Image 1 (tube, rainbow, N blue to C red):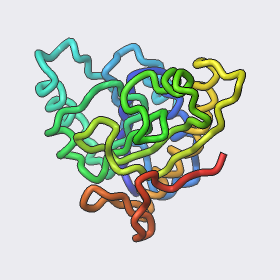
Image 2 (tube, rainbow, N blue to C red):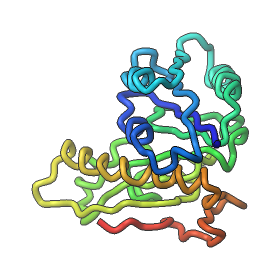
Image 3 (tube, rainbow, N blue to C red):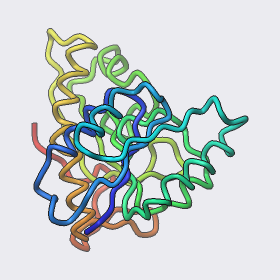
Length: 212
């Protein structure tokens, strides 16, 4: 049984998709959910599912290094095989990333390498993009720059606003993130030399692409 720790900052909709997914239930267990925001609703979701829900406020620490060191200690108490960032809104320190190298995933709302960072939906609309989407990737020291594993792409419609584009992308996130976690906990997905491999095959820079 593989142990998974999920880090969140907000409502935890991707966390809920992981909780609700049973396809990898026999191979993995979410052993803890940790938030940097004590009031995050995702902690309530964890409690309702019987999962230990913890918070570690950034206000208790003088800098990012001290915070990340304390967070590592908290995570490592659960000895996870995988750390999943599900809307964890912090830039991680190099020591933290190195500590979980090859076993930490993130989901980002753009078709990486397009639009790392914030406001991805707005940028896609302002730039007149024909498609948008979301990417699951391994976490490396480069912000949103780790090897891409799986992307879901959707067309941008003439009537799309930033708000409904956010919701359409979230729907895709809830499908693909549990799938990637399943790949990892069943041993199909690995990272080596800063590249992602699925079933021993090197994935392209865009990862595996899910059709709209």
